[in-house]
Image (cartoon, rainbow, N blue to C red; front, side, top):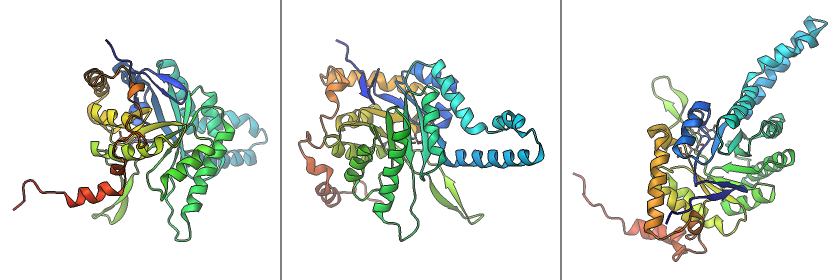
Amino acid sequence: MSVDLSTYYLGMKLKNPLAVAACAPLTGSVEMLRRLEDAGAAMAVLPSLFEEQIEHEETEFNRLFEYQAESFAESLTHFPVLQEYNTGPRDYIRHIEAAKQAVSMPIIGSLNGASPGGWIRYAKMIEEAGADALELNIYFVPTAAETTAADVEQRYIELVASVRQSVALPLAVKIGPNFTSLPNVAQHLVAAGADALVLFNRYVEADIDLETLQMKPDLVLSNRHEARGPIRWIAILRDQLQVSLAATSGVHRMQGAIKLLLAGADVTMMASILLMEGPDRIRTMLAEMTTWLEENEYDSVEQLKGSMSRGNCPDAGALERANYMKALTSYTVETPGP
Ligand SMILES: Cc1cc2nc3c(=O)[nH]c(=O)nc-3n(C[C@H](O)[C@H](O)[C@H](O)COP(=O)(O)O)c2cc1C
């Protein structure tokens, strides 16, 4: 008997629950998208088009356009040339079109920003370019002591609402784990129009370069233990939200993906492990997942999904504070150091 690996995410039927997360070296190349699909990937999220990229391009565009308008009476004839200059977002749109032509798996466009502004209209362009859905990655770092948690949450909610208004596409919202009450924020994001939540974004944290005494952003790839954050929160959110849930962060092995599905994820997304080991990792994980499901007498991924959510969990306290105390007080060092 063969098991059915298919799953539903954002109203789409995916052939299996292994997707590729937004990541330029992976999903930014059509050739790599083909390889990922050949290895079995069920869906791919394109790298984000960033608010800063859009704003920068538009500033440059306006600056050049004004300069041209002053210099030449027939400035409008230069418009196409200037448009060519405005390459970032245009290249992005072209990449969506090329990706849709090259592969048959669903292609998700991604917008990444934190403040209200003109960049949001690119959601519409992503829709028109043929993306199957849109992922909105919101990443805001409050630095002022006056900014309250409610201010930050309101910003997220307003961004989701304005993107929701501008597109009919299924909308996934990717967030980080750092909220005082994640379930409450999640509920508001859904009310504002999110059709899915993607948990969690991994932040690039600045480090200090001791040679130059400068802050430098340093991207560190994930490890498999990082799947525990999404496992806990997806289990907590699953029964409270009527939307799709995607897991990202630390999905490296079949076991991690299975745990996330048990917690209630509809799809799991990978970046770091595919950068480290290449697309074939997906092939291996799919074979191992099939074997695991067969050995554990599951007929399908759908049957597995959410069966260890907080509501279905035999020991829901393990997701909460009680487990913390137990873990700390029962920790033993197996081989004491010198
Ligand atoms: C090189 C690299 C580029 C990434 N670019 C994006 C991006 O453009 N947009 C985004 O939402 N996430 C981006 N991410 C985050 C991934 O989509 C993913 O959510 C995160 O790395 C956690 O998954 P992982 O543990 O499998 O790496 C990037 C990650 C890496 C490693």
